Image (cartoon, rainbow, N blue to C red):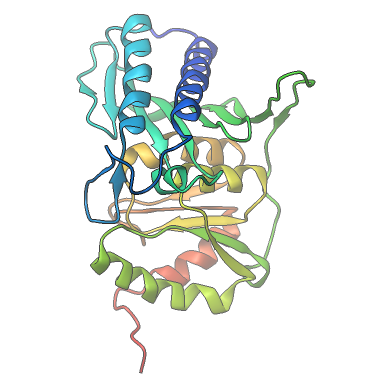
Length: 279
C-alpha cells in the first residue's frame, strides 16, 4: 500500500463526511414520500432510489476526491474509481431508502475504507437519532450518542453477550426481488421457531451495528451488496462478533454476524441446501 495515512485520520474524514451527508438527507426529507417526483426504482418495483440518495453520494465522493484524490471509490449509486493508493472507499449514501421515504427513523449513512485485506475503518451514522457507530480494524468499535447541547457520550462496544439460540433476538433483511423473498421465507421458517424473536429493520448497516452494541444478538441476510455491509461488518467484528458469508459458506451471497457460538447454531439452521417447503 502506498502512503497509508494514520487510521484515525481516515476515521475522522469518514465521520465528517457521514455527518455532512446526514445533514443533507435531513434537509431533503420533509415533503418526500415513496410516491414523490424524482423517486425511481432499481432492481425491482419495490427498490426505490431518490434524488436524496444521489445528492448524499455526491457530497461524500466530492469530499473524498478533495481529501484523498488517489483512493478508489465504490458507491451504491454508481460511484466507481480505481485505486492508486491501495485504499478504496465503499459508500452507501442512504441505507434504508424505503424507511427514509416513509419518514421512519431507521436509515443511515455508511462509509468504509478498505485495503487488500478488507475494511480498515467503518462509520455508520443515523441522522435522525444523532447516533454514530465506528470502528478501526484491530483497535475496537465505538458508539457515539452525540446530541447538540449535551455531553458527548462515546462508548466502547463489546464483547457480545453469550446467549443460547432459544434466547436470541435475531435481525434479518429481505431482498427486493420476489423470487429471492420466497427463498428467504423458507429460511425464516427454520429460524423463527428456534429463537426468541426476529426483527426486520430495513437497514443492513444498522442491523450490524445492533449486533455490535447488543440491541440484537445476531443478524443474517441471504442476499447483500458490499456497500450495505462494509462498515457495519467491521463494527460488529471489532465489537467481538463473528461475521461469515461469501462463497463456500452457508450464505454465499449474504452475511451472518453473531457471537461465535450463536453464529455456529444459526449456521446449522441456515445451511440446508434444499429449501423446506410447506406440506
